[in-house]
Image (tube, rainbow, N blue to C red; front, side):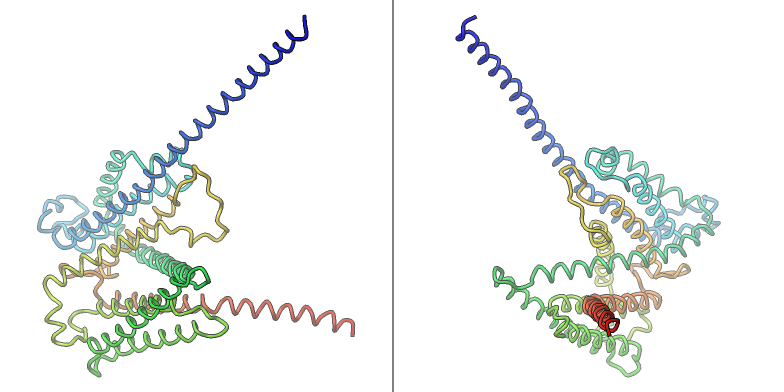
Length: 425
């Protein structure tokens, strides 16, 4: 065999080998592109599923309200169910709300148990979370019907447990709000590249504080115009003191957190104080006569609807905010990772079911609420006031805790330095 023939054969072999290697690389590249498309489709389905669950939760709120206010009028045949009693009182009013709440809790608890371990988009649990809506509709109907066959004693026990669950929901919501305020404050921190953002942050912090002060003045003139309104005067005065404390601590040289985060928190606690006073029984509420005349009819209905949508938004925003409840550092998410924690999302909605039950019955298991009323009564008032004080306490501790920890570290370092010196002496 001549040298030219050998060279030609080697060249042909080299070309064939290069073709063999190039084909798999092209196929792998195409496969990766297809996977990216599939991941995006699955991620989009997962994000859309959040809104479907939010709509389900909203519908459950309206169903609970319907059973409380109009169940006895439009569903009189419920008294044929043995556990509802002769007149059906065991399935209307407060007990009706608790039964609907328990059904909603069962539904979201099943969703929690079936999706809590989901981590990747192509796992079977992800398909169950984002799809299979026909089967989930059947599960929802069964979950809602089941509590109407439970004895009233079990429903009363659930009501006592729901108070605790609603308290946990409020705590989770509070942590989520504080986390959002912290994030927003960091976003508007001034630096050389964001001078415009610095100016806007200063403007917004001023706006929040002006709104807070106006809110305090409004509450004084509307709900504490008489000296006999001593409880309202106490609530509003203590809120004003908390505003001043948060302002002073935020501007302290060792803390130096600026005014934006404290301004947002100030507006939040003023809002909680206003909600607490509004939750006082109407017969005992210290309002001016003009205000009492305006607080009727469509304003009551509008306030009721706003309150329901606020419940749904609170559950939704807290459910998708699982990052602020992580105690370890964020893990790097892969391309096929789920966009949010399904288990946490569903457990928040299950606690939210307990929360809306407490609002509809005003935290009183034997409450007979007026139509179109929500979260009215002394129990509701004190729950909101305690929530306000707790929110302010957590925020103030969040401001001073870095300084306290730093002082402890410096004290421990100083003690360690003194120990060798004393031993040498």
